[in-house]
Amino acid sequence: MQPNDAPYLSTGAATRRLHLARTTLPRAALRGAIAPAFHTPGDALRFRAADIDAYARQLTDPASSPLGRARMGAEDRA
Image (cartoon, rainbow, N blue to C red):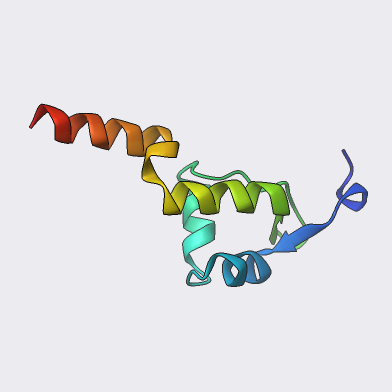
């Protein structure tokens, strides 16, 4: 898929949609929690709206993410 085939969100637009600080989403991308759709020639990140919505669900329901399920399992063992 080419960058012009679908609507993409800038980091700023995506963090506003998620109600996060602007630096949080790039850090999440660095640790692999969310993958950017592509980098612009200036190395800015662009995200698919559907990916941002899925990430929002992970943030509001930790059990829906692999890390959240692992943490919940660790709490059950404690």
